[in-house]
Image (tube, rainbow, N blue to C red):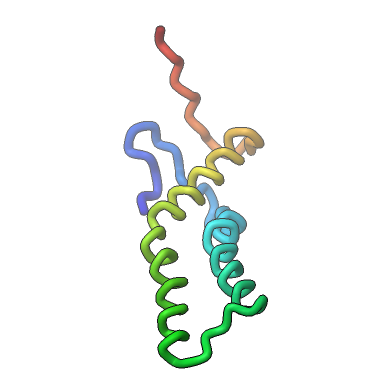
Length: 98
């Protein structure tokens, strides 16, 4: 991941650890859904079923890493845009041309 936008100079993560809350939204909640499915009765009974279940849970998590990382960066940007910190430089939005 790049540290800054090459066009406008926006620092994607101003301070290390700023996006941890959004990683919980983008990463831990899908895993919690799988844990809840097991808790509420979707239990594998053989090793083959367990391997299939693990594959069905792991495959979408691995396949969607870039999209979830983009979601995390976008949510972090929106919080910086709507609740700005005076020490954080955010380039102004471009004006719409008609």
